[in-house]
Amino acid sequence: MASTEYLRVSDLHAFYGESHVLHGIDFSVNRGECVTLLGRNGAGRTTTLRALMGLTGRRTGSIMLNGRETIAMAPHRIAQLGVGYCPEERGIYAGLTTEENLLLPPRVGSGGMSVAEIYRMFPNLEERRNSQGTRLSGGEQQMLAMARILRTGARLLLLDEISEGLAPVIVQRLGEIIRELKRKEYTIVLVEQNFRFAAPLADRMFVVEHGRIAAGIAQHELAGRMDFLQEMLGV
Image 1 (cartoon, one colour):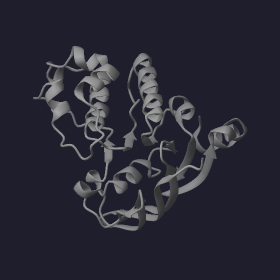
Image 2: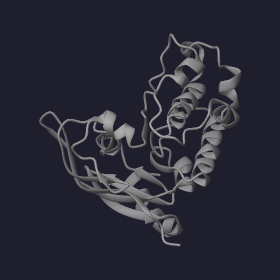
Image 3: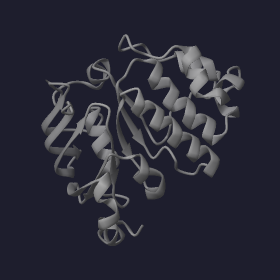
Image 4: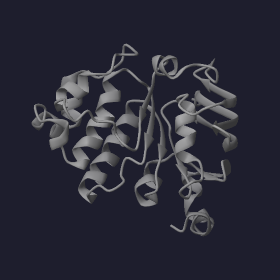
């Protein structure tokens, strides 16, 4: 059965004030697929996620989400179309408990996970459900940031550097969760510096350099492109 295109980004330019950061990004993501944006710091990967959410300044080009053009939409409208953004800084409210943080965002779709389903996927969060946000470890905060968007009903997940600074056992668990989400046909765009974490999860990888896509690599091509990735990324 042919894959269904869920997201298509065409000639995407993005600006922060006078700073021109993205210079014509082009890529697509199929429904239920995980793609990874690879690149060095400053290449434009995080800005790409922010541009998809409408969180940069001026944007030009085209962002087609499930057949709808979103380039001119406000961030809240994009979220209402089922896009969940997990930023690198996580955005956990320190004065709220784990469960209060989890229940805070509004639902944007009918298919959101229940709290019980989320706690089955993230048992650490159930154990810490009454703990203040300030008392959670970095790994628990990252799990909470991911869990929070799953409850909303979002089907496209934009995940920014979710493994950064976390213990290997937590990184391994996050990888298992992404595989589980793929089985549930979530569509995922993953920005990662940790190549060894990201590469096995991705159906396709896009190398971002100077605000453009420099290369696209499918999972089955990976072994033959390692010299290229070594040169581009230093992996």
